[in-house]
Length: 275
Image (cartoon, helix red, strand yellow):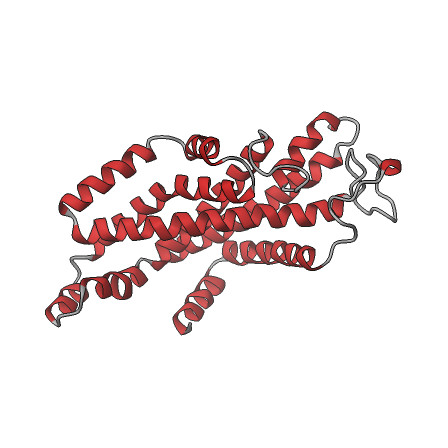
């Protein structure tokens, strides 16, 4: 915890991009947290008499084509998008880090066999892999998390493997081996913490990619399914009413940009702190 606190202080003091990205992300997380606790209306509640209404005291951000409150839908939809992105990154980073760490540390036949599989998967865009896995698992938020998580494993595996190849010949690793420290302890308690900065930067970038991937899948109708809300699903539902009620598309689009910008700036700040 102390090391993490020192790292955060280093990034905060030394980089404006990190500060701006952190503030934007914190505001978004606060918005989502409030939505998880309370929304002005049930996000799926329809009002036949208030379809595509503008900004009113009853509905500060208007309503959609089914009369559902836009503010409530945005709060819930942003939370769904963040949940899917978080689950995607957790699966991809955990599995990819284990594969990359083992391959980079041990090398040999294990490295050759596993990395050939990873390279084959990495040759395909992650969104295409996700489409394949969604077709196998089915649609819905949890199936999307699994599909995107598997699709994101190769990128994390390659990143962590590169760091382990660079670190495994360092003096502290040699010293640990001479003292009889087990391989697993060296991997997870000696080398992996030293790859933390690169992994954190990759996680932030991966989070952005996961947000865009979820939005793309839901926009195509194979991600989050109605009546559940996500930012991509809201964009898909609003495209028919773009000229009649442009805010129904602009508001979820604005939140997507806000979300991605916050994590992008934070990620760039972390990468700048590594140099």
